[in-house]
Length: 409
View 1 (cartoon, rainbow, N blue to C red):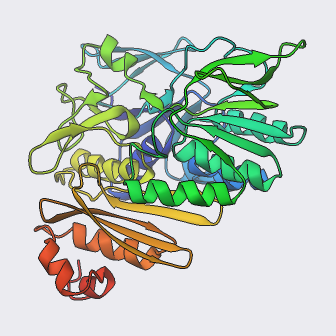
View 2: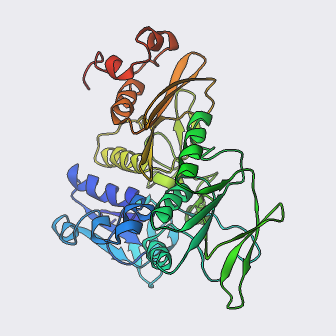
View 3: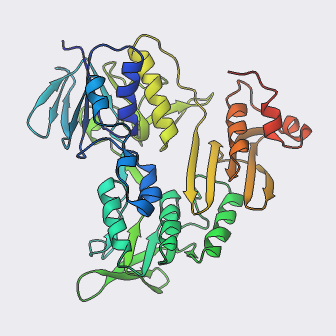
């Protein structure tokens, strides 16, 4: 059998697997298959720096010569259409077949599509790929207003960026608070105030009923469930993502809100692994299956997988962390804070830290413009034993000072 690792997906997770395999001494062939044309690139800047500056070269993970020097074959603009687990091969959309010794599914996620009347009108946009970002950036120049469906990370990042371009911005969020899936109520409230201070119109508990258009067949705004109409030149849909699991499911792999893997990213087929946005993995002491959408998770899972494939296996136990830049406010999250029953709030001018506890133990910390606090929280959360509320209280909830007492990794 060919000594070849085939990686399906050239995003953050897929690229990092290829890079880490070479760093860890893998000597076989590596093929990185991506359905987007061009060099693999970073997605997080698309809603921020790229929209502002339009510089594409800064998005690339590596220059073109990286792939040649490291013996990584990049197959771009081509998708994998099926997996033959018995023959250990995959079929490509250009008619080729590739044999594999090991197959890595880094298929990522795609934007959730809303079944709204008018969703196919012109100037109804989404943001997931570089092509989407190019289109959105080009539309900014001739627009005066934008309505954003969804008050999560991407929606709010674009809202702040669009406001910086001088557009009138309305954000329509179906739930009672911003970023409700990922942050605490104090942080939601903080960003609600800051976005409104920027001049952004935030509508909570509001459902988009339809997109209405003009005589030219382009979007002219949103109609809400209340019947109110919001005029807008552009409509951006940021309604979350769904994992790309269809390829795995068609191959008979177990799928439930992601491709199920163990604590070393292996599926039930020992010749196939999955990671990143598309993978559901066991987390914490109880092994609850979760799926995370973050650069950190993609990178660290790729490194974990590479170690297993090069004979140095270890379980994936990294502390999750996330970030979102919204105008001048940098939100950073260490740990998973859902389910907290107590919050310690530390606030000063332009800065915020929310320490989230559950049953007297620190779950995670959410910060705004407090990088030191964020890094301290990551160090503390990486310790074998959780930090108790009493221990945090004893130092006045000063996590930076507390982290300095910990042994160096």
